Image (cartoon, rainbow, N blue to C red; front, side, top):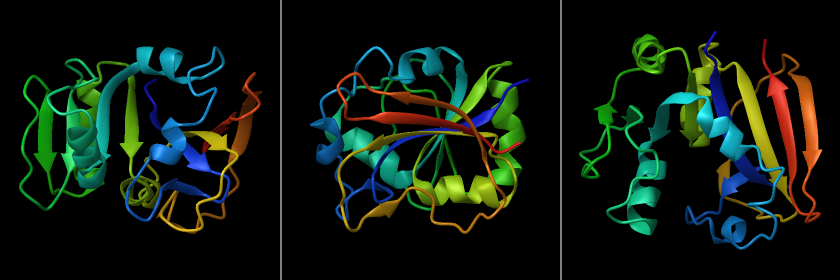
Length: 179
């Protein structure tokens, strides 16, 4: 059964980007591409993506003209007019996540739906009980402010499925289920 999953990296103090939506703190960390990074195996099981406008615009600014997700159908949740990336299989929407989720699961073709980010969008999936799993790669830096990992109160315990430390002694990868 396909899952709706949030895979993300976070600072130790719970931020996925700094207060300027900058990820340079993350991209400069050693060990991000080591053998225990869950991303390569994870992306093989992904059939559709969802992201917020800020995440989409970050991709446009930092990888102009490139789209790393091949032809995977991607929903970009926004209330603004955004410029499409050529060759990307995009669907811009301002609909609530629960109105779009079924179409995302169908488009994923039996594979998982990846909530790329950001935290506010993922929080909307969490609010509507549409989030199945959370993969968080914790980095040993603190940002003090920025975009929170999940800007929601969620008191139902998640169950830890796996903990994998990075051989570079930087990241620790945590895998939780919400079911």
